[in-house]
Image 1 (cartoon, one colour):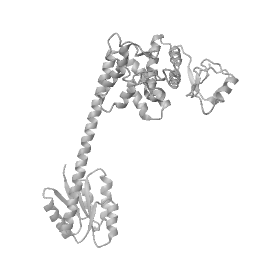
Image 2 (image 1 turned 90 degrees about the horizontal axis):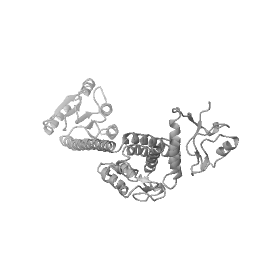
Image 3 (image 1 turned 30 degrees about the horizontal axis):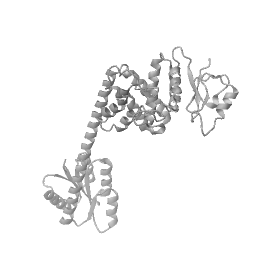
Image 4 (image 1 turned 135 degrees about the vertical axis):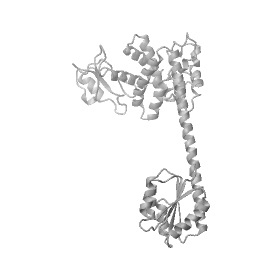
Length: 401
Protein backbone atom coordinates (compact mmCIF):
# COMPACT_ATOMS: atom_id res chain seq x y z
CA UNK A 1 0.00 0.00 0.00
CA UNK A 2 1.36 3.44 -1.01
CA UNK A 3 0.15 7.01 -1.42
CA UNK A 4 -2.43 6.89 -4.23
CA UNK A 5 -3.30 10.52 -4.89
CA UNK A 6 -2.51 14.10 -3.92
CA UNK A 7 -5.37 16.60 -3.97
CA UNK A 8 -4.85 20.36 -4.28
CA UNK A 9 -7.86 22.53 -3.45
CA UNK A 10 -6.80 26.06 -4.45
CA UNK A 11 -8.78 28.63 -6.47
CA UNK A 12 -5.75 30.81 -7.38
CA UNK A 13 -4.48 29.24 -10.59
CA UNK A 14 -0.94 30.62 -10.19
CA UNK A 15 -0.66 29.29 -6.63
CA UNK A 16 -2.24 25.95 -7.61
CA UNK A 17 0.23 25.55 -10.52
CA UNK A 18 3.18 26.35 -8.26
CA UNK A 19 2.08 23.77 -5.67
CA UNK A 20 1.47 21.23 -8.45
CA UNK A 21 4.97 21.70 -9.85
CA UNK A 22 6.63 21.24 -6.44
CA UNK A 23 4.50 18.22 -5.58
CA UNK A 24 5.02 16.53 -8.95
CA UNK A 25 8.80 16.79 -8.57
CA UNK A 26 8.65 15.43 -5.03
CA UNK A 27 6.18 12.64 -5.93
CA UNK A 28 6.82 12.00 -9.64
CA UNK A 29 4.86 8.72 -9.75
CA UNK A 30 1.74 9.82 -7.90
CA UNK A 31 -1.32 11.27 -9.59
CA UNK A 32 -2.34 14.83 -8.70
CA UNK A 33 -5.87 16.24 -8.83
CA UNK A 34 -6.67 19.98 -8.69
CA UNK A 35 -9.94 21.73 -7.93
CA UNK A 36 -10.71 25.34 -7.10
CA UNK A 37 -14.50 25.52 -7.12
CA UNK A 38 -16.80 23.86 -4.58
CA UNK A 39 -18.74 21.98 -7.28
CA UNK A 40 -15.51 20.40 -8.55
CA UNK A 41 -14.35 19.53 -5.04
CA UNK A 42 -17.68 17.89 -4.23
CA UNK A 43 -17.46 15.94 -7.50
CA UNK A 44 -14.04 14.65 -6.44
CA UNK A 45 -15.46 13.40 -3.13
CA UNK A 46 -17.03 10.49 -4.97
CA UNK A 47 -13.72 9.54 -6.58
CA UNK A 48 -11.19 10.01 -3.77
CA UNK A 49 -8.43 7.43 -3.46
CA UNK A 50 -6.52 6.62 -0.30
CA UNK A 51 -3.90 6.85 1.19
CA UNK A 52 -3.69 10.47 0.04
CA UNK A 53 -2.45 13.97 0.80
CA UNK A 54 -4.78 17.00 0.81
CA UNK A 55 -3.41 20.52 0.35
CA UNK A 56 -6.28 22.93 1.05
CA UNK A 57 -6.53 26.70 0.91
CA UNK A 58 -8.71 28.05 3.72
CA UNK A 59 -10.16 30.94 1.68
CA UNK A 60 -11.53 29.53 -1.54
CA UNK A 61 -13.71 31.63 -3.82
CA UNK A 62 -16.99 29.90 -2.94
CA UNK A 63 -16.10 27.66 0.01
CA UNK A 64 -14.30 27.52 3.34
CA UNK A 65 -11.34 25.13 3.36
CA UNK A 66 -11.87 24.26 7.03
CA UNK A 67 -15.43 23.12 6.30
CA UNK A 68 -14.13 21.00 3.43
CA UNK A 69 -11.60 19.45 5.80
CA UNK A 70 -14.38 18.65 8.30
CA UNK A 71 -16.40 17.03 5.52
CA UNK A 72 -13.47 14.81 4.53
CA UNK A 73 -13.03 13.80 8.16
CA UNK A 74 -16.75 13.02 8.44
CA UNK A 75 -16.98 11.02 5.20
CA UNK A 76 -13.73 9.07 5.51
CA UNK A 77 -13.01 8.50 9.21
CA UNK A 78 -11.16 5.22 8.68
CA UNK A 79 -9.02 6.17 5.69
CA UNK A 80 -5.35 7.14 5.78
CA UNK A 81 -4.57 10.68 4.67
CA UNK A 82 -2.55 13.75 5.64
CA UNK A 83 -4.08 17.21 5.37
CA UNK A 84 -2.12 20.45 4.93
CA UNK A 85 -3.97 23.76 5.22
CA UNK A 86 -2.76 27.02 3.63
CA UNK A 87 -3.80 30.38 5.10
CA UNK A 88 -3.37 33.97 3.96
CA UNK A 89 -2.00 36.55 6.38
CA UNK A 90 -0.56 36.19 9.84
CA UNK A 91 -3.73 35.38 11.78
CA UNK A 92 -2.57 32.44 13.93
CA UNK A 93 -6.14 31.68 15.01
CA UNK A 94 -6.95 30.39 11.50
CA UNK A 95 -4.21 27.80 11.79
CA UNK A 96 -5.47 26.78 15.25
CA UNK A 97 -9.01 26.42 13.90
CA UNK A 98 -7.67 24.22 11.12
CA UNK A 99 -5.81 21.96 13.56
CA UNK A 100 -8.92 21.64 15.72
CA UNK A 101 -10.88 20.69 12.61
CA UNK A 102 -8.46 17.82 11.97
CA UNK A 103 -5.65 19.35 9.87
CA UNK A 104 -2.31 17.62 10.33
CA UNK A 105 -0.23 20.70 9.39
CA UNK A 106 -0.60 24.25 8.10
CA UNK A 107 1.49 27.15 6.78
CA UNK A 108 0.98 30.77 5.78
CA UNK A 109 1.10 32.11 2.26
CA UNK A 110 2.98 33.21 0.26
CA UNK A 111 4.01 29.65 -0.51
CA UNK A 112 7.71 28.94 -0.22
CA UNK A 113 9.22 25.84 -1.78
CA UNK A 114 11.17 24.93 1.36
CA UNK A 115 8.08 25.16 3.60
CA UNK A 116 6.01 23.07 1.24
CA UNK A 117 8.68 20.37 0.90
CA UNK A 118 9.01 20.18 4.71
CA UNK A 119 5.27 19.57 4.96
CA UNK A 120 5.37 16.98 2.20
CA UNK A 121 8.20 15.14 3.99
CA UNK A 122 6.10 15.14 7.17
CA UNK A 123 3.13 13.85 5.21
CA UNK A 124 5.14 11.06 3.59
CA UNK A 125 6.54 9.94 6.95
CA UNK A 126 3.12 10.13 8.64
CA UNK A 127 1.36 8.12 5.94
CA UNK A 128 4.16 5.56 5.80
CA UNK A 129 3.84 4.97 9.55
CA UNK A 130 0.06 4.74 9.29
CA UNK A 131 0.30 2.25 6.41
CA UNK A 132 2.79 0.11 8.35
CA UNK A 133 0.59 0.21 11.44
CA UNK A 134 -2.50 -0.75 9.43
CA UNK A 135 -0.70 -3.61 7.68
CA UNK A 136 0.61 -4.86 11.04
CA UNK A 137 -2.87 -4.63 12.52
CA UNK A 138 -4.28 -6.60 9.58
CA UNK A 139 -1.59 -9.28 10.01
CA UNK A 140 -2.33 -9.53 13.73
CA UNK A 141 -6.08 -9.71 13.03
CA UNK A 142 -5.52 -12.45 10.44
CA UNK A 143 -3.34 -14.39 12.88
CA UNK A 144 -5.91 -14.03 15.65
CA UNK A 145 -8.67 -15.12 13.29
CA UNK A 146 -6.62 -18.13 12.17
CA UNK A 147 -5.77 -18.99 15.79
CA UNK A 148 -9.45 -18.74 16.70
CA UNK A 149 -10.32 -21.10 13.84
CA UNK A 150 -7.56 -23.52 14.84
CA UNK A 151 -8.70 -23.33 18.46
CA UNK A 152 -12.29 -24.10 17.46
CA UNK A 153 -11.12 -27.00 15.29
CA UNK A 154 -9.08 -28.47 18.14
CA UNK A 155 -11.98 -28.14 20.60
CA UNK A 156 -14.32 -29.79 18.10
CA UNK A 157 -11.89 -32.65 17.48
CA UNK A 158 -11.41 -33.28 21.21
CA UNK A 159 -15.16 -33.10 21.79
CA UNK A 160 -15.81 -35.59 18.97
CA UNK A 161 -13.11 -37.91 20.34
CA UNK A 162 -14.71 -37.65 23.79
CA UNK A 163 -18.14 -38.50 22.36
CA UNK A 164 -16.78 -41.50 20.46
CA UNK A 165 -14.92 -42.92 23.47
CA UNK A 166 -17.43 -42.35 26.26
CA UNK A 167 -20.99 -43.71 25.96
CA UNK A 168 -23.68 -41.00 25.93
CA UNK A 169 -21.03 -38.27 26.38
CA UNK A 170 -22.78 -35.95 23.93
CA UNK A 171 -26.10 -36.26 25.76
CA UNK A 172 -24.45 -35.96 29.19
CA UNK A 173 -22.38 -32.89 28.30
CA UNK A 174 -25.49 -31.21 26.86
CA UNK A 175 -27.38 -31.79 30.14
CA UNK A 176 -24.36 -30.64 32.15
CA UNK A 177 -23.99 -27.52 29.99
CA UNK A 178 -27.63 -26.49 30.38
CA UNK A 179 -27.58 -26.93 34.15
CA UNK A 180 -24.17 -25.27 34.59
CA UNK A 181 -25.25 -22.27 32.52
CA UNK A 182 -28.47 -21.80 34.54
CA UNK A 183 -26.73 -22.16 37.92
CA UNK A 184 -23.73 -19.97 37.13
CA UNK A 185 -26.05 -17.20 35.96
CA UNK A 186 -27.49 -17.12 39.49
CA UNK A 187 -24.17 -17.31 41.29
CA UNK A 188 -22.17 -14.86 39.22
CA UNK A 189 -22.70 -11.55 37.47
CA UNK A 190 -19.47 -12.07 35.53
CA UNK A 191 -20.34 -12.94 31.90
CA UNK A 192 -16.86 -14.42 31.41
CA UNK A 193 -17.52 -17.05 34.10
CA UNK A 194 -20.81 -17.96 32.44
CA UNK A 195 -19.09 -18.24 29.06
CA UNK A 196 -16.24 -20.31 30.50
CA UNK A 197 -18.48 -22.80 32.30
CA UNK A 198 -20.52 -23.27 29.12
CA UNK A 199 -17.43 -24.05 27.06
CA UNK A 200 -15.84 -26.23 29.76
CA UNK A 201 -19.06 -28.27 29.98
CA UNK A 202 -18.52 -29.55 26.45
CA UNK A 203 -15.23 -31.16 27.54
CA UNK A 204 -16.28 -32.36 30.98
CA UNK A 205 -14.87 -35.88 30.52
CA UNK A 206 -11.58 -35.23 28.70
CA UNK A 207 -9.57 -36.40 31.71
CA UNK A 208 -10.89 -39.93 31.16
CA UNK A 209 -9.97 -40.22 27.48
CA UNK A 210 -6.66 -41.99 28.04
CA UNK A 211 -7.90 -44.41 30.66
CA UNK A 212 -8.30 -48.07 29.72
CA UNK A 213 -11.58 -49.29 28.26
CA UNK A 214 -12.43 -51.02 31.54
CA UNK A 215 -11.90 -47.82 33.55
CA UNK A 216 -13.32 -45.18 31.23
CA UNK A 217 -16.88 -46.10 32.25
CA UNK A 218 -16.15 -45.60 35.96
CA UNK A 219 -16.50 -42.31 37.84
CA UNK A 220 -13.24 -40.53 38.65
CA UNK A 221 -14.32 -40.06 42.28
CA UNK A 222 -16.46 -42.30 44.49
CA UNK A 223 -17.60 -40.85 47.83
CA UNK A 224 -14.92 -38.18 47.52
CA UNK A 225 -12.03 -40.59 46.87
CA UNK A 226 -10.48 -41.63 43.57
CA UNK A 227 -12.24 -44.76 42.35
CA UNK A 228 -8.84 -46.37 41.74
CA UNK A 229 -5.22 -45.27 41.53
CA UNK A 230 -5.38 -44.65 37.77
CA UNK A 231 -7.99 -41.94 38.28
CA UNK A 232 -5.32 -39.72 39.86
CA UNK A 233 -4.09 -39.21 36.31
CA UNK A 234 -7.37 -37.68 35.07
CA UNK A 235 -6.36 -34.08 35.89
CA UNK A 236 -2.89 -34.73 34.44
CA UNK A 237 -4.36 -36.02 31.19
CA UNK A 238 -6.66 -32.99 31.08
CA UNK A 239 -3.71 -30.62 31.48
CA UNK A 240 -1.60 -32.39 28.87
CA UNK A 241 -4.35 -32.49 26.28
CA UNK A 242 -5.84 -29.03 26.67
CA UNK A 243 -2.58 -27.14 27.20
CA UNK A 244 -1.96 -27.57 23.47
CA UNK A 245 -4.90 -25.28 22.67
CA UNK A 246 -3.73 -21.63 22.51
CA UNK A 247 -5.58 -19.22 24.80
CA UNK A 248 -7.33 -22.07 26.62
CA UNK A 249 -5.64 -21.66 30.00
CA UNK A 250 -8.76 -20.62 31.94
CA UNK A 251 -10.85 -23.51 30.61
CA UNK A 252 -8.00 -25.93 31.28
CA UNK A 253 -7.73 -24.69 34.87
CA UNK A 254 -11.47 -25.24 35.39
CA UNK A 255 -11.41 -28.79 34.05
CA UNK A 256 -8.21 -29.74 35.88
CA UNK A 257 -9.83 -28.84 39.22
CA UNK A 258 -13.26 -30.45 38.78
CA UNK A 259 -12.39 -33.16 41.28
CA UNK A 260 -11.27 -30.95 44.12
CA UNK A 261 -13.41 -31.66 47.19
CA UNK A 262 -14.94 -28.72 49.02
CA UNK A 263 -13.13 -29.70 52.23
CA UNK A 264 -9.71 -29.77 50.54
CA UNK A 265 -9.33 -33.56 50.23
CA UNK A 266 -9.69 -33.84 46.46
CA UNK A 267 -7.30 -33.95 43.48
CA UNK A 268 -4.97 -32.72 42.12
CA UNK A 269 -4.06 -29.76 44.38
CA UNK A 270 -6.24 -30.28 47.45
CA UNK A 271 -7.89 -26.89 46.97
CA UNK A 272 -10.78 -26.15 49.29
CA UNK A 273 -13.92 -24.02 49.44
CA UNK A 274 -13.54 -20.75 47.51
CA UNK A 275 -10.03 -21.63 46.28
CA UNK A 276 -11.71 -23.98 43.82
CA UNK A 277 -12.85 -22.09 40.69
CA UNK A 278 -16.61 -21.49 40.75
CA UNK A 279 -16.97 -23.14 37.36
CA UNK A 280 -15.18 -26.27 38.65
CA UNK A 281 -17.53 -26.46 41.65
CA UNK A 282 -20.57 -26.12 39.40
CA UNK A 283 -19.38 -28.77 36.96
CA UNK A 284 -18.54 -31.21 39.78
CA UNK A 285 -22.13 -31.08 41.04
CA UNK A 286 -23.54 -31.36 37.51
CA UNK A 287 -21.33 -34.34 36.63
CA UNK A 288 -22.06 -36.20 39.87
CA UNK A 289 -25.78 -35.48 39.56
CA UNK A 290 -25.81 -37.26 36.19
CA UNK A 291 -23.91 -40.21 37.71
CA UNK A 292 -26.31 -40.51 40.67
CA UNK A 293 -29.29 -40.10 38.35
CA UNK A 294 -28.20 -43.09 36.27
CA UNK A 295 -27.41 -45.19 39.36
CA UNK A 296 -30.88 -44.50 40.79
CA UNK A 297 -33.04 -45.24 37.74
CA UNK A 298 -33.56 -41.58 36.84
CA UNK A 299 -34.88 -40.49 40.25
CA UNK A 300 -33.98 -36.82 40.44
CA UNK A 301 -34.98 -36.45 44.09
CA UNK A 302 -32.68 -39.32 45.09
CA UNK A 303 -29.76 -37.86 43.13
CA UNK A 304 -30.26 -34.47 44.81
CA UNK A 305 -30.50 -36.15 48.22
CA UNK A 306 -27.18 -37.93 47.67
CA UNK A 307 -25.56 -34.64 46.70
CA UNK A 308 -26.94 -32.87 49.77
CA UNK A 309 -25.61 -35.68 51.98
CA UNK A 310 -22.10 -34.63 50.96
CA UNK A 311 -22.64 -30.86 50.99
CA UNK A 312 -19.69 -29.00 52.59
CA UNK A 313 -17.46 -32.11 52.40
CA UNK A 314 -17.49 -32.60 48.63
CA UNK A 315 -19.71 -29.86 47.25
CA UNK A 316 -20.61 -26.20 47.57
CA UNK A 317 -24.11 -26.56 49.07
CA UNK A 318 -25.34 -23.45 47.21
CA UNK A 319 -24.77 -25.18 43.88
CA UNK A 320 -26.79 -28.23 44.96
CA UNK A 321 -29.62 -25.97 46.14
CA UNK A 322 -29.58 -24.14 42.82
CA UNK A 323 -29.43 -27.45 40.95
CA UNK A 324 -32.58 -28.49 42.78
CA UNK A 325 -34.22 -25.23 41.72
CA UNK A 326 -32.98 -25.72 38.16
CA UNK A 327 -34.86 -29.03 38.06
CA UNK A 328 -37.95 -27.22 39.35
CA UNK A 329 -37.60 -24.65 36.56
CA UNK A 330 -37.66 -27.51 34.02
CA UNK A 331 -40.93 -28.67 35.55
CA UNK A 332 -42.68 -25.31 35.31
CA UNK A 333 -44.50 -26.60 32.24
CA UNK A 334 -45.05 -29.97 33.87
CA UNK A 335 -43.42 -33.27 32.95
CA UNK A 336 -45.38 -36.43 32.25
CA UNK A 337 -46.59 -37.77 35.58
CA UNK A 338 -45.33 -34.75 37.51
CA UNK A 339 -47.28 -31.96 39.15
CA UNK A 340 -46.31 -28.61 37.70
CA UNK A 341 -44.05 -26.39 39.83
CA UNK A 342 -44.02 -22.61 39.93
CA UNK A 343 -41.72 -20.01 41.52
CA UNK A 344 -43.46 -17.63 43.91
CA UNK A 345 -42.63 -14.42 45.73
CA UNK A 346 -42.36 -14.52 49.50
CA UNK A 347 -45.11 -11.90 49.71
CA UNK A 348 -47.46 -14.23 47.79
CA UNK A 349 -47.14 -17.20 50.17
CA UNK A 350 -50.45 -18.35 51.67
CA UNK A 351 -51.47 -21.23 53.95
CA UNK A 352 -52.04 -24.65 52.32
CA UNK A 353 -49.52 -24.05 49.54
CA UNK A 354 -47.15 -27.02 49.26
CA UNK A 355 -43.42 -26.45 48.79
CA UNK A 356 -41.96 -28.45 45.91
CA UNK A 357 -38.33 -27.79 46.85
CA UNK A 358 -36.35 -27.22 50.04
CA UNK A 359 -35.83 -23.63 51.17
CA UNK A 360 -32.25 -22.85 52.21
CA UNK A 361 -30.66 -19.70 53.57
CA UNK A 362 -27.45 -18.26 52.15
CA UNK A 363 -25.48 -19.78 55.04
CA UNK A 364 -26.79 -23.29 54.36
CA UNK A 365 -29.57 -23.52 56.94
CA UNK A 366 -32.43 -25.70 55.75
CA UNK A 367 -35.35 -23.47 56.64
CA UNK A 368 -38.31 -25.52 55.38
CA UNK A 369 -38.34 -28.89 53.63
CA UNK A 370 -39.85 -29.87 50.30
CA UNK A 371 -43.38 -31.26 50.63
CA UNK A 372 -44.25 -28.99 53.54
CA UNK A 373 -47.81 -27.65 53.50
CA UNK A 374 -47.53 -24.02 54.51
CA UNK A 375 -49.19 -22.71 57.66
CA UNK A 376 -49.22 -19.26 59.19
CA UNK A 377 -46.38 -20.43 61.43
CA UNK A 378 -44.11 -21.61 58.58
CA UNK A 379 -44.87 -18.50 56.53
CA UNK A 380 -43.94 -16.37 59.54
CA UNK A 381 -40.68 -18.34 59.84
CA UNK A 382 -39.86 -17.70 56.17
CA UNK A 383 -40.77 -14.03 56.34
CA UNK A 384 -38.64 -13.41 59.39
CA UNK A 385 -35.44 -15.13 58.30
CA UNK A 386 -32.37 -13.09 59.20
CA UNK A 387 -32.02 -10.46 56.47
CA UNK A 388 -28.23 -10.72 56.60
CA UNK A 389 -28.53 -14.40 55.77
CA UNK A 390 -31.47 -14.39 53.37
CA UNK A 391 -33.14 -17.08 51.31
CA UNK A 392 -31.06 -18.71 48.61
CA UNK A 393 -32.57 -18.44 45.16
CA UNK A 394 -36.30 -18.87 44.61
CA UNK A 395 -39.20 -20.56 46.38
CA UNK A 396 -41.07 -23.19 44.36
CA UNK A 397 -44.52 -24.58 45.09
CA UNK A 398 -46.68 -27.22 43.48
CA UNK A 399 -49.37 -25.82 41.26
CA UNK A 400 -52.66 -25.80 43.09
CA UNK A 401 -55.63 -27.32 41.32
